[in-house]
Image 1 (cartoon, helix red, strand yellow):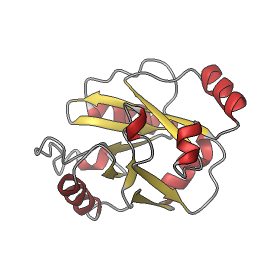
Image 2 (cartoon, one colour):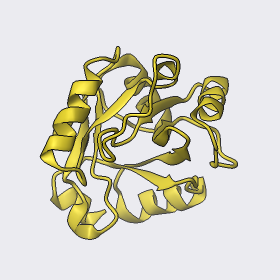
Image 3 (cartoon, one colour):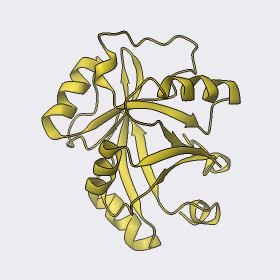
Length: 172
């Protein structure tokens, strides 16, 4: 968290692949660092990686984006298509686009061209795109972020701000 703070971030959202962070671990991390820590999950689905916010805990493995969408609707969560231009093949169709609030428009691990393509896709959605470092190593922390208009104090205000479209993706 010291590195995130040093790079100008006001908080971080941990989105592990196909696993929820235990709330007790997140709370301990917040207490130890004095830094805002939020959580989501990066799901592996038939349509690619999907960032989910506000999903209830439990099993985070979904074979299909349709099942992930049903779970998100059931608990008031939201889905965003992660790094949609990374593999060059957008798998979303007119039928499946309704599963997503928007896309990850700026990804710290993607190239400039991939982020330009993803930002272009974000314009087709009803809400702006989100941004994230997609950090798997310390050097990747803080390369991209989502800037929120309102203060984000917990996972509930995070989901509310995302639902309201009160944010923007920013490269850092």
